[in-house]
Image (cartoon, rainbow, N blue to C red; front, top):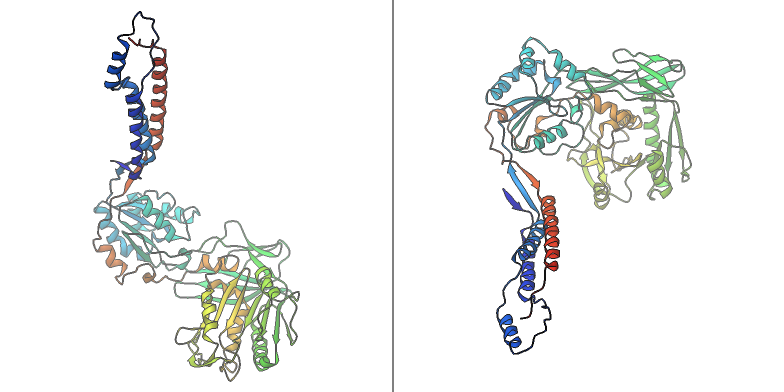
Length: 547
């Protein structure tokens, strides 16, 4: 079907009046012929003026056609063709083949296949899946699916992006997608599903283990081991003998690493079972440098904070270099953590250190605060929740919320008690109350050291935040086997299994457009060439006489 993208551009067709007017009023001078009498010239001229009719009709048509073709080209001509809609597509992730959960889903897949749905792999290019592969699944995982699962070209950490690509590739067709429910496959932004997509997440029961962080402590190499199942992700510290340079480290239950240039490099082909390729793990050798700066009005807060940090240091894999000062520290002071206990704003040089050096800054509420009784949400089942009596002023909270800060500690009303705002390589941690008995009983809480320890060793805290995916964050995101809540994929409350069997409304037919402007421009060029040839031929003909 021929359509125009800009029909209003056809107003340019008014330009056709130009060649018509030219041809109607064009009076070429005749040849001068010597005659003996001029009595007939006036009458002949009058007859010529009264008889206005187009001359050189082919030239007129060429010029008018040239203008018409250019006008249509400006209007954006396209040829719109409806794409035949297929029955539908079943997209299967190779990791689900051979699992008990997929065996329970087989009747649904077989039903869709009998209705004309095509079987494809959820992989680059969406290659077709043979029916023999699906039949062999009843006897166990087929070799083809096993090869696809181990091929890095077919594994993906962005299932949602792959599904959006499939919706574009099979426009107008309903899609049924089956993938593992593990969080490691849902990195990136979970945007709303395209129309006509039914997504079934399956538990695959995979457990992974990996090295999250490493630190040298004397003759030992301290390793933070991460384990993840579909229920939880946990960490524990273990020690192995310090390897020689370029030596191999073989922790129990995880792939082997090699110590190269101050980092643990996974050996070629190493990867956690069920997870993705493991990144290198930097080995920390320097102590954790913590600076606590306080003014007189925050002296009591500094005492409680000092005791909490010292208690948390017993769980650190590296030594703690702790210093308390009452004079404003210089930005040249090396510090991994700066506890800024002052009502004065953070100096610009320290803000630059946060951006460039990765320094983390802790700040507390300023001013008189406002009375607001709430309880801190516990992070453990046996934790006694701390009580918050006063919070910082509302305008300060609103300014932090505008900065897209992530809430680490929240109260029973869902409001942030401790928020984290990532800035460059570092972050600003804002406590919306104070470690002061008149503000809260956090200082007397026995869980304060544990909460501070979770902050001081960022390998297990920053990795849980969607702020960046590099280093330890990437390791956790790639191996996280916790199950995704299906409600995060569907906006409705219907279960995915119900959506798979419920007939969906037919999606609108997709169309394919072919731009015709290059062809119209080529046609205009041909018409122009013909017009020039005809004009030259006309100019070469003998001119008519005046009589």
